[in-house]
Amino acid sequence: MDAQKLAELPRHDSLSAVYHGEPNLRTLRERSRRYLTITQDLTRVTNRLKALYPSWGVARSGAPVYAPGIGRNG
Image 1 (cartoon, rainbow, N blue to C red):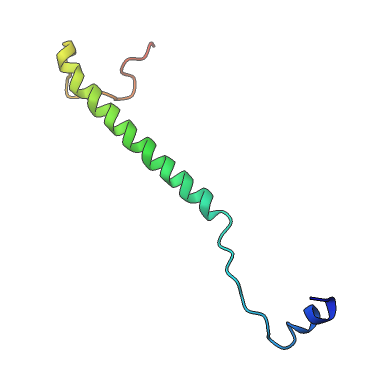
Image 2 (cartoon, rainbow, N blue to C red):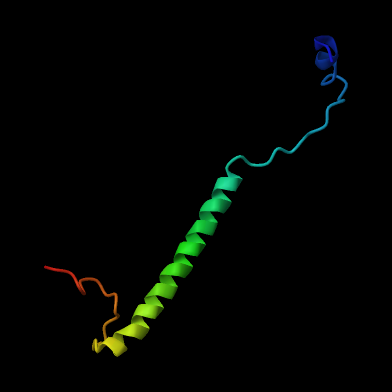
């Protein structure tokens, strides 16, 4: 198409809108999927460790296994 025809299209409402999608939507979906996967993995590992502690003879008091300060030096 030549420049004259391209210039006339908007004047005659001959152009139709085209949806190109949100450019950051793919990034958001990918990051959401990664977050979900990491959260599920962390939960699985945490539950596995909590199940192993009694077999290792680690006594647990009323505090959660991963309470702040547990297992830290200082």
